[in-house]
Structure formats: structure tokens, C-alpha cells
Image 1: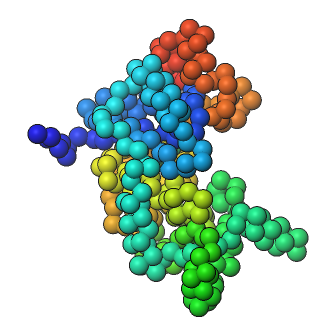
Image 2: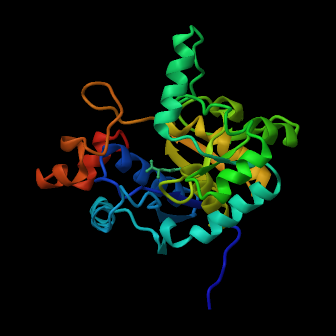
Length: 294
Ligand code: GLU
């Protein structure tokens, strides 16, 4: 018999198997484990593998191997996002039924051309907190008849959230509780800074924002511990939680481990890959020291 314990805190580490783990992931995984232990909580592992063009089973095996070497242990079963597309699809349908999502037909190239064209005329085009151009209004403003014709013709499309309509429907400002290494306390969420975020992609099912929000709720996650690079994305997750009627966890965005060049580590960062450190004979205790957790 499985006893579900509703009282204990639930933490999760959620890597994407599109490369090897590096020191930044080690900090995240170890901090999740330390915080879960301190709270007498549970630690879950979620493999975020919806982007099938970049994720491989080999990287997943390597991640499990690196985590075991680090001394991180998690509750089974591991959740793999690729096995739960139906749940994300249901969440998307709910947003479509609420009239808050629209089919988006522009390709990356068309968005780029639109932004270039606009900026050629001296008007700077707004960027999201990650520096990517906000999605142009073309598809949002399309006539219903035009939209239906394109869908009937089978035109390739993504689904995007009408952020202005969604925030207006909510009618109040959102906040989240933050305990991390950046700003703390009740943080005012500004989902509108992201423009019409993608909910479902044309080249991969679901989107990071939609699946992470649905999963954290379905898995009963109470504490999200992840890097400060995802701090601003939390505004979008809070909005989706409210629209979908999901509960909000507490967030703890931790400092990032930077490379020798002062930049965020990337999956291809060879000498900070855990596999490379392990091959050089370092131990899990050495990694703790390297990421400042000793
Ligand atoms: N899968 C994301 C990554 O590897 C992390 C998502 C999250 O923790 O919310 O960067």
C-alpha cells in the first residue's frame, strides 16, 4: 500500500537530457537534496525531455549516473515529460477554451524579418527578459475567418498565450514567495514582460513554461529550487498556475556557477562537466567545495 504523505515538503530536480551535467547542475541538485533533508522532505527527479530533437536516452543515462556519483538520491519513479504529453495537451485545451490561446503561424525567420523591418524604420522592438524579441501581434490580431482557413489548410502552427487578455482576465497583480539568493520576499510578477509566450510548439510538443507548471502541480511540488536564470520566468509560471487553477510552490532561485570567463556555464562547457571532473579523480566532496556548499 502506498501511503501518501501530504504534510511533507516536496522538492524536485528537473534536468533536460540535452547534454552532460556541469557544476551549475551539481549546485542545483545538491542544494535541492540539502534543503529536502533539512525539511525532512521528499526529493523527486524529473527528466524534461519534450524537445525530442535535442534530448537523447544516452544523455539521460549519463545524468542518472552523474547524480548517483554526486551522492544525490531521489524517489522513484522518475517522471519523464515525454510520457505525459496528454496532460499538457489538456492544460492547453483549457486555455484555448478560455479564449486565451491562439494559433501562431509565424516561423522564426518571419519573426526575425518582422523585427528587422520594424527596427529599420527606427522603432526599437521590445525584448523579453531573456533578450528574445516579443512575438509580433500579427497572429493575435488575425480575423477569425482567416485563422480558421489557415487551420483548415493544415498550416503548421504553434499555440501562444494572449498575455494581455490573460492578465486582464485575472484582473489582479500576482506575486510569488521567494527565498533564494536574489530579491527575497513577495515578488511582484510581471508576466506581460514576456509577451505572448509559446504554450505548444510547432516543432516539439508542449513548451517549457506549460509543462513545468503542470508537472510541479501534478507532482505536488511545494519548493522549486533552481538557478537565478529562471527567476523572471516564474512570473509566467504564476500566471499559468492561476489560469489553470493550480497551487503555487515557494521559489528559491540560487546563484549561478559561472565559468572562468564570468559567463553562465553551458551544456558544452567541457572542463566543468561532472564527467570530466570525475575522470580527473575529483570526489563528490570536491564538487561540493567547488560550488560553495562545503
Ligand atoms: N529543465 C530546466 C533546465 O534544465 C529546468 C527547469 C526548472 O527547474 O524549472 O534548465
